[in-house]
Length: 307
Image 1 (cartoon, rainbow, N blue to C red):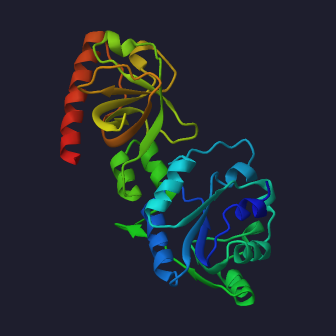
Image 2: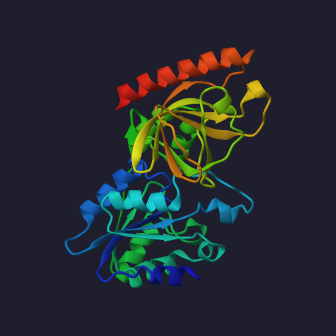
């Protein structure tokens, strides 16, 4: 399906003020831009977002498999929760990468009834990033829409960008990541059968088959909330390869506190609140069990403080 056909599926019945971008994570910088978008929308105009379900690097560098802060569906939901009435999620394709800035402007003006375009920091539309602020303003004069840009958001002197959020999470600093996202980072997936090693230690864990492409925080133990069955549960989550057992497969394993029951096949969302410690190798099983008991106790304290 072509880009124009994709847009046609979201064609509004009223004029729009819109912005375009990946919006990975829908972090506080994105929310800052979306707030401006809503404020600048004239009465009767729909605040709208065109978001790419994949990052353009997957087209420009085939074979690249970037990580994402949200699933496509979660991203759409977060943008809608920010008060955006129309969210068009489209795939960034090779065909789209060849669309000129002029064609882009004409499609947005025609199909999407655009009367205002909001550009984020360093934004540029169209092939070769031709459609920067001055170019799009020229197109706006020709086609009948205004163009404004939003400065980047800084928090404590640091720019809020998806790349910086990803770097914080990979380093295991989920608290810093949450401060930039405006919420705790989450992973979601299906509970699958593991090797049941945790059960033999007295701490049965749920092994999560994480949605493909989602970014995992760095290896370690985390205080987390486990969401499933419409409820939120205290939990401690391990990310890593279980070096004490000489294993190499990286896993997400969730110990749900004060719970007993069959979780296999259930959808679970793991919400990361605080890192408890780095991954460690223990001399024997007794030392590992003692450390797990401490991890659970520390996670309880962290979750009680954060609630």
